Length: 430
Image (cartoon, rainbow, N blue to C red; front, side, top):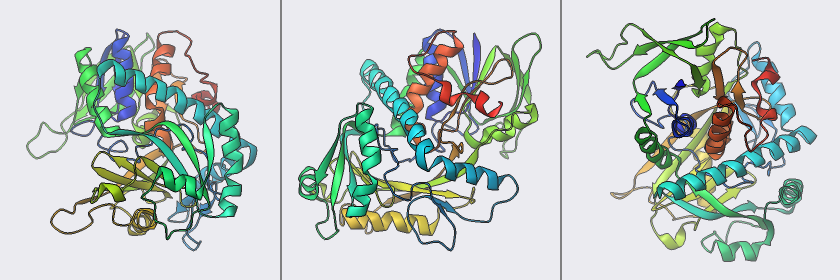
């Protein structure tokens, strides 16, 4: 089939690779000038099954501007209209039985995706920054108690997750600051960290070798399903005019389209009557060069209290975390970045170069398209020829390869190796 993909983040590129490998004629449309320029650019890089577990006791908390800092969703402004409903659904999904059920589903996807990603890496002999092993750091006894339920669930799901004492944790990560209180930790085995953007760039090259085409600086402004099968895409090219202004739209016809455009999908699909339950949730990261390897993490740690990760990516360290709602655009939040710097200083003071001639810190914010129940929209929509691969939230990189393989199987009429029912767009009437 002739298939269009909207969006060249890691989710879209993974789809392009799988569909091209299956023999389809694939074209990827991306509004930016290259791949992985938005949510895939500098995310936390975590891929370990288990990292998405609700380790913090206030995991499902809505943190209003007047609230104390901590984990949960930072609400930056008063909601309007239907936004109240979305926030309420998000809060409900982060509590009790639904939270554990959703986490079990996400865990299965992360695990499946990790296997697929490893197979791709081995097949093409990719060389990119990655590392094994991860510690969830628990500062106090109450935090350790709150972590018991997700820890037991991971064990029930077949994941090796070890409870460690503070001394055992420090033996695995000897650079942990001894002045920061540490009650214990949970060790998650296997590959834990991989550089999302590097992987996306490498996979794009492989997709192109399989015949996939990429059209950058191109906005898909309209999708029109046709009664006699197929879909028409109206395209606007933004880089053909010397001033950078958009040129008039052109149209192309495809047998099917897979929308992997994150929050931009709302504007594309709303005219078709598909009211996506997506909201923009902003995450932040900072990346800096290692100052002294002996003071830097060996692999990755996750601060259970704050939900902030610190990961080693070759000769750099990336600190990422936080979830902010209500500030979809603008520069990185100073308060969010301060939390990242503070947690980095708590655990690995002096690990990175923050100033001087050799100091170079990249501060980044990324918008994650998020569904309130925590599960993505993955599969066929109710419109013929229109497929969705959206709403992965903070787990987009962790599940990209698995979601792409499962969706490609569905498009070809095969049964995927993983149950997709919990991700069906039909649960929202889409």
